[in-house]
Amino acid sequence: MLVTSAYRRLAMKTHFASQPSPQRGITLLEMLLVLGLLVAIAAVAMPSATRPLETYRLRKSGDLVRAEWAKARAKAMETGRTYVFRYQPDANGYMVEPWYSDEDYLESSTMMGTTGFGTTTATATLFDQSTPDAMKYLPEGVTFVASETTQDARDLLASQGTDALVNQDTSMSSPIFFYPDGTSSTARLFVKNERERYIKLSLRGLTGVVYVSDLLTAENVE
Image (spheres, rainbow, N blue to C red):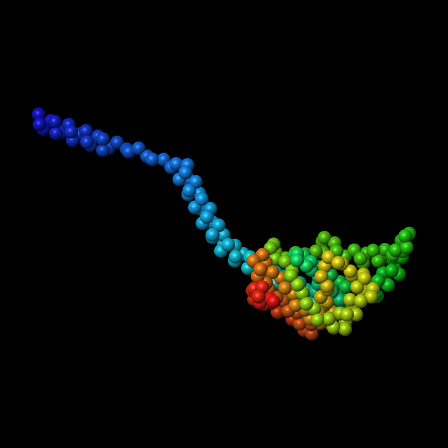
């Protein structure tokens, strides 16, 4: 009897031990705490993750402007006419286009004739240069800040009289000139990203060589 009773107690213990214990579920409060923790971690890590991309876009913008200046110089030498680079201040749009001279204005006026209102169609054509197709843009988040141009006699001459009137566009910056002989304006141009990091491009007028700086802070620019 004692052996039978002990055997039964052992069997019962074995039976209850083999039964799976009830699983405790996750409460809504615990889930919200975990989600809040994940959001906080993502907010801290996000700037570190996006900084390399912003730096890449800024450097790419510097290389893009340098390439556009090289193209403008090559076009001027190939076509035998002056080209200009202009940009939208505090924005990311820019244009590379021919600079229309007094000779272009007079020749086009003679060939095209006049309209019934007494305005030459050539004048209207020359004024309408800021077409959407001609406008190009820097990468997202990068804008033009400012430029400095050391004007020589040719720059001053081109910026006055009929030339300036025909090429006038108040929404764009002052032009940076590229001449058919391979020379250009001597200029400095700054672009920046949303983190207030800058790149400076320096254009040597005599040789047309462009130098692109490393990343600069606002203190370096000032």
